[in-house]
Each structure stands twice: as C-alpha cells, then as structure tokens.
Length: 401
Ligand code: ADP
Image (cartoon, rainbow, N blue to C red; front, side, top):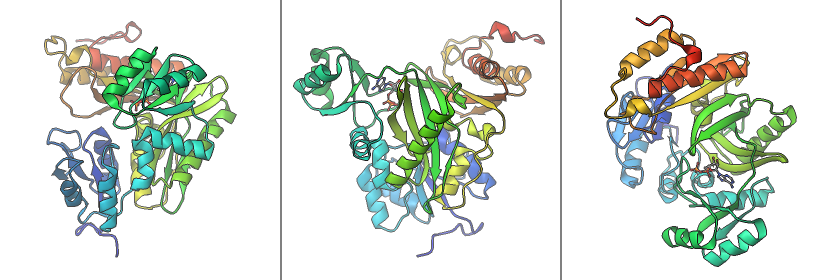
C-alpha cells in the first residue's frame, strides 16, 4: 500500500503524538520541507497546538484518538514516550507506520526493559537490579553500598520517579507505593553527557558531537556542544555506543543516549527516541537540526549534515523563575524579550508560547562562538534575564532608556 500523501502538496504527512515544545519545533522544521506537522494535542493551549494547522485534540492513551490522528498520515511519531505500547502495536497491525516502532520505543519507556537489553548487549551501565521487596534492596545495597538509587520503571521525567534512598525503611515505603522498582548503584559521576544519533529505516545514521548536559534540580539547565575537554577517544566511544544501540534496537528517528561520565569511562543512563532537550542547540549550531533530521529519518529521506556551524554552541533553558510569579512587578514578558533582543542581538530565542509557571520549561536560548566560557556566560545570562528579570553585572545594560 503506497504511503498516503497530502492531497495538495503531494508530500508526506507526519503525525506527532504530543503537542509540547518538541512538536512545536518539529513543526517549524516541517514547514521548510514543504510539510505541516499533524499534531495530537491534549488542549488548544499546548505549544504545538498554538502553531500547527492540523491539530487533533485527544488523549495519547485513547486508542480511538490515536487512530483518528493516524488516518491518512504517512507515519506516526512522538514528542514524548507515554503512549501505551499495545496501542502502538494495534496501530501497526492496522497498517500505520509507527516510528520508532513499539518494539524499539519500549526501551525508552521502561527502564527495566532497557537495563535488561543493555545487559544482554554487554553495553556499559550502572550496576542494577529489579527489586520488589525491602530484602531485595538490602541484598543490592550490601553488594553496591548505600545510598541506592530507586527508579520507577515507567513514566518518570525531569527526575520525577528517581529516589536516592539511604536505608531499608525508605526503600520499603517506596516499594509499597510504587511496586516493583529498578535499583541502581549511585554512580560517582564527573558529569552528564548526551550522544544523539538519527537513524533511518534504510539504516543510514548521522551523529552530532557529544554534548555536556548540566542539570539543576533534576532538570536540564544548559547544554554545551561539544562537551568541553572530552577526549576524542571518549567522544568517539560515546558516538559508536549510540550508533550500536540505534542499530541493535532498530530505532527510526532521533535517539538521545543520556550518559554518565565517570573517571573510568561512560555508562548509559537512559534513552529518548524523539527530539531531545540535549539537541536544541542544533537549530543554530549544526547544519541540520535534530528536528529536521527526525523528520528526514522517519520519512526515510537521506539524512542531513550534522557539522557544527561554529566551534562552540551553548543552549540555556528558560525555566519559569521569579518573573513567572503571580505578584511579579518587574518587566512583563514582552518587555523582557525586547530587552533581551537589544542586549544579546547574537543570542537566538525560542519561546514556546506557554503560560508562565515556576519551574516550567518556557523557552530556550542558544549562543554560538569560539570560547566556551564566553559563550556559556552569554547564554546563561540571557536565559536568566528572561526567567528572573535579573541582569548579570557582567552584562549590565548600558543603553537603558
Ligand atoms: P528521568 O527519567 O526523570 O530523566 P533519570 O533516570 O535520567 O530520570 O535520572 C534523573 C537524574 O538523576 C539524572 O540526570 C542523574 O543526575 C540522577 N541519577 C539517575 N540515576 C543515577 C545513578 N544511578 N547514580 C547517580 N545519579 C543518578
């Protein structure tokens, strides 16, 4: 059966499940390719629903809503990993192309499934065990010492569902609440890295430079490309690891391999099979962005160049801060954007159009340049101004009027 095409443009229709900022930025990339992303959003105020023309409203756990958005689409893909596996299998059985396939995606949905698969493949990862009783945790802690990291296998994001436990009592109360958990040794990490690769059904792969991700309170705050001071050898090892995982699992689309760097090497933390926060810098910092590449990959188009456009790119998230408070009396958002543009004309803004709330990912900024410290300071100061209305003294506004 030939893949359905758009009746007017004669081009493919990609349907994305989820209407957040990842869908919004994928839509932006789709426009340049002559397409318009079809989106399944939960409501009209979601980031992508505000900008895409073909938006369907519904719940990603509702099979009928999934069937409706898949009808007439060339391929169905995702802006998050929360769609139930059996629904995706049902879509596939009905002839819909799903990318990544449910069999691959489950490794990004379920941390226990991932740990088992990586174990079988002999890939580096923290020591782990499946635990369903306090006694199980005690055995694990005896072998790997307290504290132990306990994780809910499914549904976690931004550090929710990750608990550092110091004794059996804490472990028992978590097990009571959540049932079976993944136990991991607490890794003595130097920092966190991310290796992104795109893979097409044809089997073509494209990798970007390995980046450093800086987390604050379990949420990604900054991404530095390439990871400063990472040896060529270790960077190549991380890229090869990402390609091996993509090939082995048969990933189609973007794969982000989140890594812990330790003094002895790298360990896999978790996977995302979609555009990822660690790749936002590619919009300006690489010849092909992760969003365009995801579309190319799921449509089995040849992949684009991942070469960097500058020696250094730094992305800083704008997380809802002081300026998101209800009683905020400083400059309003529109005014902050005005000042941001006046003071950092070379820093690029991506605002997601969300209602401002503390801690929420509201947008991001990207700076390019030659010197890591300088580029990083510029990106962070600009993001901080947008979030908190606070100007870093190093970037004092000289031309205020
Ligand atoms: P999420 O699915 O919420 O992103 P992660 O499994 O990525 O959860 O964990 C969130 C954060 O917790 C990681 O970015 C890391 O900083 C920390 N963390 C997770 N697992 C470990 C571990 N085994 N050892 C030490 N820190 C960890």
